Image (cartoon, rainbow, N blue to C red; front, side):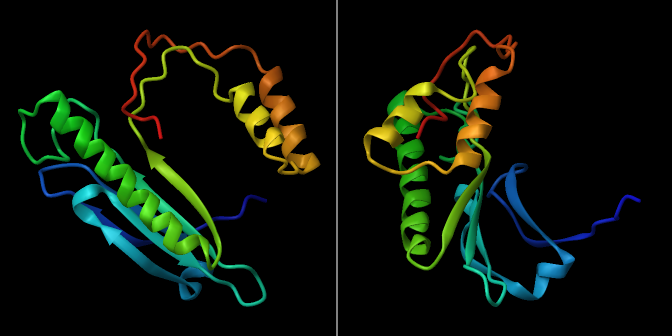
Length: 169
């Protein structure tokens, strides 16, 4: 029998324009264990923490990075490439500051829409795994098994022919 799950919107923020924003949903059973950690509504970033007694605290960053042609980060429709690049860097700096502040007290997970144009690149790059290995960080077997399953999938059939740096961290 399929269990019906219900969720509450814990924090929903709209950016200072007519659309866009971010919302965090928490399962009802975890509602009493969650709280807002920080919020940057004009930038589309909010972070919540979930702490169930007896378990390590988890922080979840819910993010929305507007696409590069929207001008939403600058609240204007006409911006130079340099202004957009600066706004993008500021957005990632804000996210990094929130991650740094929370990572001391628990695990941090980042989720959202980064509006990256990825051309036909793989979901997981082998080079990322090499970097982890070269840094001497042990990779648990379940993660390696997942990696191997993902790499064994047929090549992604993305029809996007554009690659941009807007969504790269």
